[in-house]
Each structure stands twice: as structure tokens, then as C-alpha cells.
Length: 199
Image (cartoon, rainbow, N blue to C red):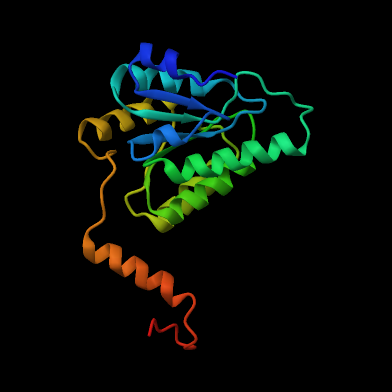
């Protein structure tokens, strides 16, 4: 299984890490996770990597699509893939979601809800013929007033490029206040006070 590193260096992105590649090399770097259909879907991830490599130099791209995936792989291989995607989503500073028209992609819908709750940079697109496009649009509008769901992969990638040029994709260190507030919120989960007090 290739890591994608050499090919990505030639295209301009800092590195492309394809499943199940080593994720530790991307810790602390600015990266985008490519979320979307794989099974029975066209290889849109390849087009995305080529575009980002040309227009977003230095970006790390997390690509869950393997070069060779055995559809008869056992549960251990499937669990390894799920774990890799979970860790890659956590590492990425931004997430690109593309819902192609070919399939419903229920796992990707689940990942969209997960990333939305994380509050990370989110770029979303759904083909006009995607059967759950209305669901995606409505759910995002309810949670983010500024949410916009693109209708083409080209426009979606262009929005990522604009954000990259503006410096929005770069990993930002939290302020001391927000960091300590986050710690307090985590501590409150173990508090014995029924009101959730941290003390």
C-alpha cells in the first residue's frame, strides 16, 4: 500500500496520506480530510488531491480511499479502516465533504454530523441529484446560518482554495481562556454535583 507521499510532493501538497498510512507525520500540520463516498462511487478523491496539490501548496491531505481494497476483507481490515478514518478526522484542521449522486453514503452522513459537532472548518458539497441533498442542506442550515452546500466538486474545491489563500485553514492555537474553559468543561463531566458544577 503506497503512502502517497512521493506522488503528493510532485503535485505540490506537502503530503497525501492514504489509508492506512502513518498519521503521526501529520501531527501539528494544516490538513484537510476528504470525506465522501468510496464504494460504488467515482474516484473524486483523485481529482481533489490533484486540485489541492496545484492550488494549496504545503497542505496535508488525508485520503481514506485505498489504492487496492479487497471487498472480501474480513472484519479486522474493516475495523482498521474505520479506526484510521476516525484518527484522521481528529487530526485534520479542515474537512471537505462531497456527496456524489451514485449512492446515499450513510457513513459519510454520520461523519458530517460528527465533524459539525467538533466545530472545525467545514466545506460541503452535494450533487443536485444526490437523494439526501435536502437533508444535508437543511441540517447544516439549522446548525450554521452561514452554511452553504455547493452543487459541484469544482466549486467546492474552489471554496477550499479561497479559504487556504486567506489563511483560514491553518491550525490555530487556542487562547489561554478558551483552553482553560475547555478543561473546566471536561472536569465537569466527572463532577458529583447534580448541576454539573466543576467544584
